[in-house]
Image 1: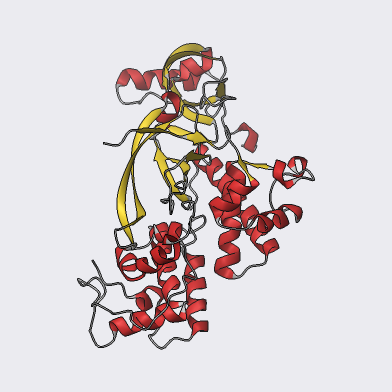
Image 2: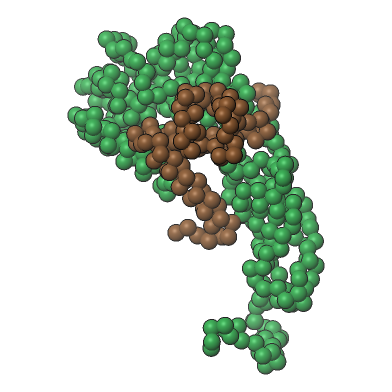
Length: 313
Length: 105
């Protein structure tokens, strides 16, 4: 287990006041806000900041943590086991975090403060806490439905009532038609219940991995349809692969790049399905060989065409 | 290997007030206040009886965002609601940018 330097995480000195810790936490909470941050690893950083704040903003946990580190020269990342009785004389009240949040925290945190969570919950009949996480899906998953294996760190009670973090693997059947921003619920897959009560539920927020060919906007899908100049000009029926197979579409004559063709109901197959939009992109043949160049020269001579007419030149 | 578990979309089995409060670890009253203040649920879904309210994925995410702003920044509920509005708007615009293949930077 790695030693965590919570002061370094928040960027404050060891003698920082409670007010300085609060300010540092807020500055970082803003910097790494998972919905707006452009920092890489913002979500991971935010979890670290939350963990450091859960300890340093609580006077008793901070005092115990300070005593643990005092004079022992632990460096961040160095191998660490808490000495027996390190927390003697401290009574943690468990403010600032709960079991569901603690699932995001490190093994270091669970080792130090897990007993407290167990002690708080162990003697009462209490339903397990609901846990929240994210799941990344491929676009194809929503067209056919899929089963995804998902590994989450979950708090579990050991034989002495301590809360430990352990990997928990689930095989989840994802229904067809799910789309980004939706939340799915897995009954009974959250935190364990206490004294015979039911386990909590697991809620997963759905996200999609970027796709090389398709762009997703809610239930609608966008794809680029490359066409030759004569297909765009004269109209044509062309084949294109779409997420659920191959389709033939009619390109209307006199089309330009950027024209959108809508395939109704071929987007994400939700209860009310989305649409699939094909955005035309006219691709010009190269002008490399003498024959190719001759074609372009003929067009230039024969067609009275000024693409900048609207610009007044 | 564990057995397969069916995922249920919140849209197919929406949360009631008690379920939402329990899941987000806030009190029923906390949610009722914010619904009454217009920070949660569309007006046409609000009836006099909170027990009849139902919450979808969007409400679920919105409650989590409001909780985070109130807790992390000691923000007022109205400010937290405004932040949630802006985050939702940014999400819509980012999705549109990606769909139209424009870069954000």
